[in-house]
Image 1 (tube, helix red, strand yellow):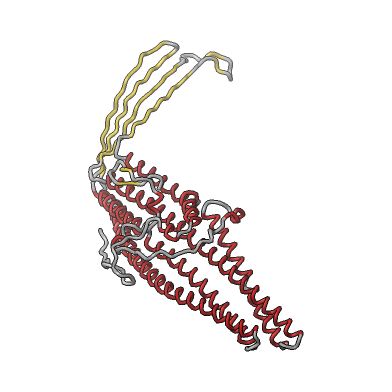
Image 2 (tube, one colour; image 1 turned 45 degrees about the vertical axis):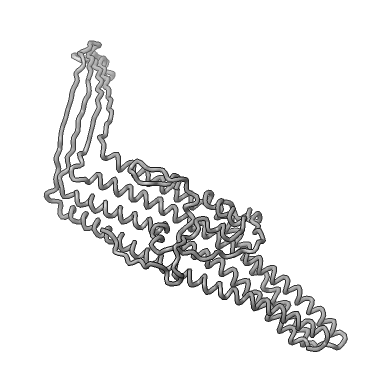
Length: 457
């Protein structure tokens, strides 16, 4: 059973583009600290290591499934030692008793001949499940990479906002000092002093939450890179201006071959199809062959009676005739799981396309907003400079100056928030596009079943 998909030729929220997103998308921001943190997390993150262990277990399960196609050979050895003599209870000789020692050794062979393809289907299902586990591990790595970038950008935004708040707070403290001095000589009213004090205190009050946000973001990044929170102080942003790379979503069809959750869902369909074939084989006969080869030696009263070799070969043909509907139920379960896997894949594709469309719109809109806020911030700085100059010359009272300071504060804070949100939206876009995990996988090597597989996924 295969999914019926309607994949568009291009994303609605983006102009048609053949350019695929960069694999190492984090390098596009131009921040060496971010690139280093990403690479550390890709290898040292604990969730990545847990996912790698799941892959290891899945590959071992694949070996188990393949083993059923081959004969099973076992070795058995047993020995006996029977001694007789005086009866310890009555202190008399037991008549007609003999000492006997024996040894038996043999090799047994068991083999199920895969007449209906049940075992081969099981191997195919196991291989598909292994591939799904590998793609699941890639998905975990992608989530870790995007989490590192998002928390790093949150940290950078919080630090930038802290610098802004502290600079504005210092300016407002200076304004408060000047107003207080003017009040002493009768050039300002108590109301002016209280208003300046209120603005200065309100700005100072915004600093502790930002410090908390910066600390929490540092702790999260430290844990994501496989370290611990108490070592988070070593994580220091580079201070360089972060530039959001140009959007290159590529074609929707390529998303199906790049996004790990979709690849895992597709592998799950292959596994469900193979399990369906395996269930259908339950209706057909199963042929079992067994053989036993061995030898037995016996000594009685120290006299060897020689050894005897023996061989036993048997075949068993088994076929269900009546089992109260169990075989039909097995097939019904497999068919239901097959349909469920297809529906899950179709739903995952629909959600993936939705994620990309939403992220494209968010990045485009936030980019426009960020540009406007940067322009507004420059205008607010210029207006504040003029208001300060007029106030210093006594041409305006305190109210226009404080209003200009409030506007400058609000606009700069909004501009910083918008830039941080643009960075976070761009990370969400790369997460939706599903790239980046390829960078950390070695060159693919062919596996024994002919499929390609990345080592250490």
